Image 1 (tube, rainbow, N blue to C red):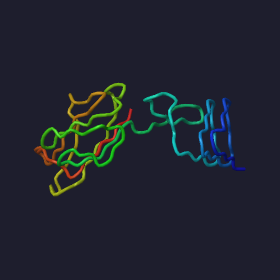
Image 2 (image 1 turned 180 degrees about the horizontal axis):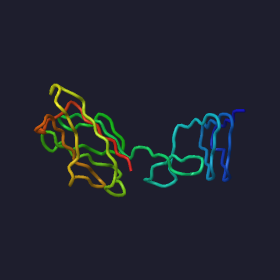
Image 3 (image 1 turned 30 degrees about the vertical axis):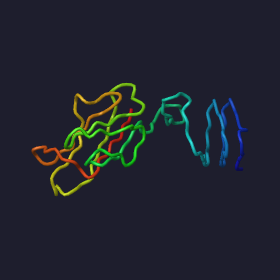
Image 4 (image 1 turned 120 degrees about the vertical axis):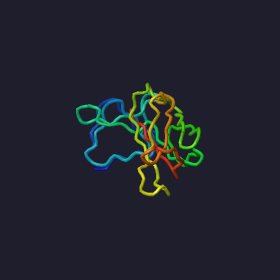
Length: 165
């Protein structure tokens, strides 16, 4: 049986299990465990602590995943952001060199990063977007775009970065 409510009325401090559909049109607060054997429809997932991303846990409570801490897609010609999350700016340093600045810095510089670039007119040459080994900090990361066996610096059509920690 579906459970639905509007407004700010559902508050529980115990564990709750729903075998149907739970839909909230207002605020719902759970300080225990919320388990849904059906559909759980939410518009916002919010962490209990400020500047701490929510985590995904399995039925035993073990962490099995997290959301990206930051991501950005930007134009290679000038560093202008096309779309982003937790990125304040991309500084165009010089041809193929960019510094991505985070709004909320990470706890340290031991994060995982994934990069990509949009293929352009450099043909079949290998194109990469890699970080500077001394440019990885908790508040920013410096990236280099290169192509070919000689690692020639260039400005790709667009570049992307996702950060996980």
